Length: 144
Image: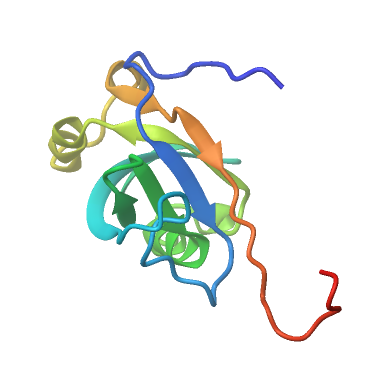
């Protein structure tokens, strides 16, 4: 499947959405170095609502330029933010498309928002979207 570029900025960061609520990644799954917390302006498209810029504190590996968002936390923040505005879209499918320039996102907070075209000028798609596979360990066949 071909990836269509949405943002007008060069692609930045890799992104991993951790769908396992019982797994927290304090170390980078790629390089095994410690991650740290960093706030990003994530550009999220929500089915039935449209685009949304969400300020979210995520785990970040500076060496790999990898943003790690925990799905349960992300969905809780989306539900909290959308409940007063559009409760009918809470729980809808969504996709995280990239990051906005943080200064542009902060400027849009004080206003009624920004036109989509302005946001796309400052949107950077992800270089790569990774999937997390967890081996739960435990007992198993010796040849595994």
